[in-house]
Amino acid sequence: MDDQPTRVTPVLVIAGLTGSGKTLAIQQLEQLGYTGLEGIPPGQVIPLVEAMRPHHTALALSLNLHAQEYRDQVPTLAAWVQSQGIPFLFLEARPLVLLNRLSAHRRPHPHHPGGGLLEAIEQEVRDLAPLRERCTHWLDTSDLNAQQLRQQLQALAHGIPQPLNLRLVSFGFKYGAPPDANLLFDVRFLPNPFFQPHLRHLTGQDPPLQEFLFADPVTQSTYQHIVSLIQAFWPHYRAERRPHLSVAIGCTGGQHRSVALVERLAQDLRPWTVPAGNPALPALNIQVQHRHLLDSQRELEARFGPASGSVSVAQQQVRIPLAGVSVPPHG
Image (cartoon, rainbow, N blue to C red):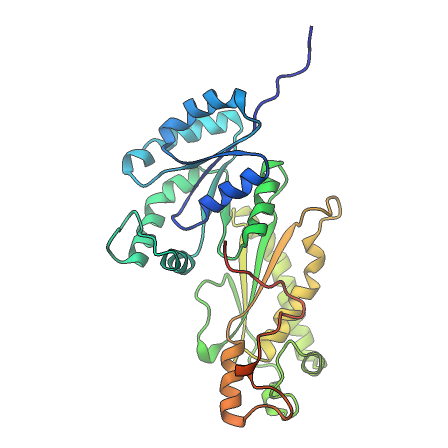
């Protein structure tokens, strides 16, 4: 008599906003050995899973939630997946990110096939809010590329705590603050390299400018306060089921001080990216964005000309951040 326990086929159910990456998630899960099914009405999930489980090693299903009658079926499905211990994942992204993705692919939005796209996105966010609260896991894909999304899904599939997403943004107040920052720091009171002619054309990615800035005690103290706040606030964002935190640091133009602090933050937080117990899986995804670096450099060159012996900004490509992780476009 075989006393081996019957193996239960893993199942993952995915819901989310239009443009948040449900198709990409299914594709990544298929690479992990899942059989993927897309656009399933919630009322059909239970019979489909029961029929297919004996014949597949793992199943991933994304939901069709475009019609109100489908959204009305979610409570029954949510109760069932909870009783089965099945992860129920909700994918989302910032509205402007969704707008750019849908516009790039020229996709009509199901809530507004011929109307205003941003209004349709905002309406869908409101419509799916009750469903979102019934999910067991949430993932903001705004700054994730395909590989990072796969890492998140792999962690979820293996019952490992999901890698956390920390987006570090430098910006210039003269061009406007990012509207989606969770934590925003104004560092315009720090020593300004703009007034040092030998540093003016450099950026916060350049070691001489970093050395000048961090030689100042106020910079050192300010930086340590920012690090401490991030470390103190992070568990509370996690407790609020927010796997994504955006930290923005602003100076006047977004070229010198804010860039230097973001670069140092990315470097000093790198040890968080690999947990000691599982070096193969990142515990933290760090993304770096220098929002106004090129704008400031162009304006500086228009006013003072290129730095002596250097190639103008218009003729060179942007360097990859010294310590940060560049963010490829969403696949």
